Image (cartoon, rainbow, N blue to C red; front, side, top):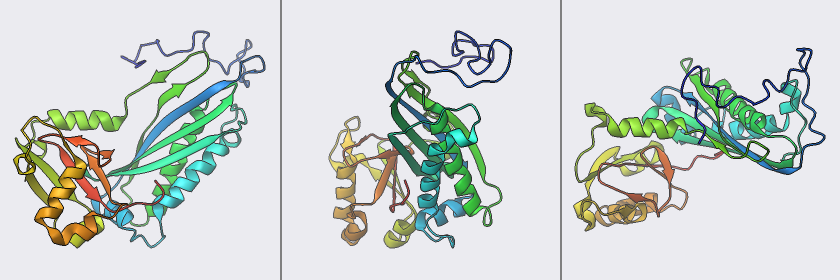
Length: 284
């Protein structure tokens, strides 16, 4: 993994210097004529931080302008395809895949945007992935600015690059770092309770279940303290003790996360984990 270690670290600089400056010091588009055609892809991320009520409104679909996440997703895809029109020295590229995901992170009062761009070509797609993330974030901001003027767009960066002469390159997501910091924090608000899962329910689910937060003892799932339990087992246990919850929790499109990371029914959990359930969000 290549990761900058200080402000003076040069390990990630191009070995031949700035690639878009010619011998005369003038800006120019890089000549890729002789480069080999290889499979290339890039992943980027961005965040939009907001007030809790704004995030709740987006997740529940109550925003008056409609499906905020769907619009932001389409904007990001369109932006990736228009990158060369926006960034003067970028090559027009024939992208073969553009993916834009918008993932609510309720514990952080924000939406995480992750983009993926792929092609078979002679130059990389980092700028396309970054442009998709940036425009998706700006679109989300634009649609919600009337109800929340405190929103902040942050953390725009490339997470991963594959293909070309420089090969495979990665940086950790800010979400992974935030989750790790939360895990090791001694603050009472994030302190873990031994032997328990912290369960949270958001938006429409919170109203349907009439429950926002509960602690669930792992021993109730017939597991040993250090033994892994799947999210599917957690959900089944909740339904067994609250049969009236079955309709809401059994919906195939209910989303789940573990420690602010999107998860599946097969994902395992351990004592101290925070598990969140929330209704589906389109556009992600």
